[in-house]
Image (cartoon, rainbow, N blue to C red; front, side, top):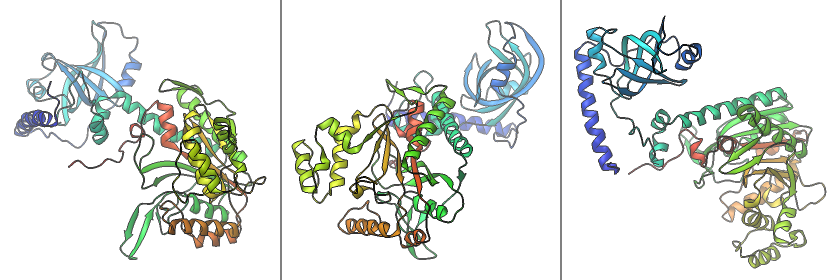
Amino acid sequence: METTDTAQHGNHSSVRDTRIQKLTDLIDKGINPYPYVYNKNTSAAELQKKYAGLTNGEETEHSYNVAGRIMAMRNSGMFIDLTDPSGKIQIFCHKENLSEEQMSLLKLLDVGDIAGFSGTVRRTPRGELSIKATKIKLLSKSLLPLPEKFHGLTDVDIRYRQRYVDMIVNEEVRDTFRKRSLIIQKIREFLTKQGFLEVETPMLHTIAGGAAAKPFTTHHNAHCMDMFLRIAPELHLKRLLVGGLNEKIFEINRSFRNEGISPRHNPEFTMLELYQAYVDYNEMMVLVENMVSSIAQDVLGTMVIEYQGKTLDLTPPWDRKTMLGSIKEVTGIDFDKYLTAEEAAAEARRMGIEPEEGLNWGQILELIFEEKVEPKLIQPVHIIDYPREISPLAKVHRDNPRLTERFESRINGWEVCNAFSELTDPIDQRNRFEAQAKAKAAGDEEACDIDEDFICALEHGMPPAGGLGVGIDRIVMLLTNSPSIRDVIAFPTMKPRQ
């Protein structure tokens, strides 16, 4: 079988030429190959359920209109496999039941065409539920062939670039995206029942902030100014908390980070971010583990899931470990005793980790954690109490001023959630922003700018609050056993082909 792009293109061109001729023949016969409507009145799944008790060889007088895509044709079209989003049903086309005009139309149909069939329900002697067609209507002529039947669409690059073909031929892909929709629906239901109000905030920002990430830049012509695509909705959501819109708010948002692509990273991604007044990060830990476990139960019927050969138990409560404690557990070294970045860097080098010049104590600690600890965190765990230098929007830890009340929830070694006891002191916030601005001036592209309006909002008074951000794409990966983030984003970011 030819597999090169050139051979496939040649095959497609030949098939397309044949189908273009059929399209011309249809038009010559006065048939519109792309009509406006069709009175579909049932689905494949509804028929399969309704007539589950129909015995082999039994026929009914019940007539229906079905419609879908032709996925297979046998015996010169006498038997057609028709699929719609609910499933498959067989169409039986015979000259005893179809007019001469309809039989001529049948000869112009191809695998991949979308068509409607009217007829009565029967079960064949071999047990296949079928529609005995009395009328055929072409609804959309397909000019390009579907992938070869027994091999399917296996080229990963083509699958991501032509997701529509991937979905046509791979039922498991359609199932993944239906589950994604259900997961997001269940998140909304969970939070709404908890009293959270769903809100919307801008995707175009004048200042890049809300997270440590390199932004995408765009330009607003009318105002003649550069703007940034949203890194995170955090600072606008906190403004709503200041305004007293509700004590519990959330947004399921699209965010954009101008960073590398990997099995866990896409520049455009979906995140849940929420805030709750009068609680701290401890309440956020309980909320996230209850939410993730209940969604798994609702969608999969279990809190114990299989992911790429690993069994993950999402049942609350999840384990809790401090960042310093988890590093000490793996390396045997207590980094809290090192007061300077130089001391921490020297110890990192003894472990075989080479920190870049200019990193502070917190950044070095984070580097060691990512290298030595993160891959070992397979079962759900909250890593708590992050260094102050890498947490510009979190409250200082009430027991250790070097740290903040921040946690990240990890599953399968991945960060799936980032949360804080939110910083509400405008003076402290300004100091943190100024430190970030210095880091940015020194070359840190992921550092935040000073957001004067946000500081102004804090100076009007923000209640104590817990905040939480959850990576929905990664949760969907876990709950659908998908190895790459591109498998759960319908149209992932791809470099254009030359």
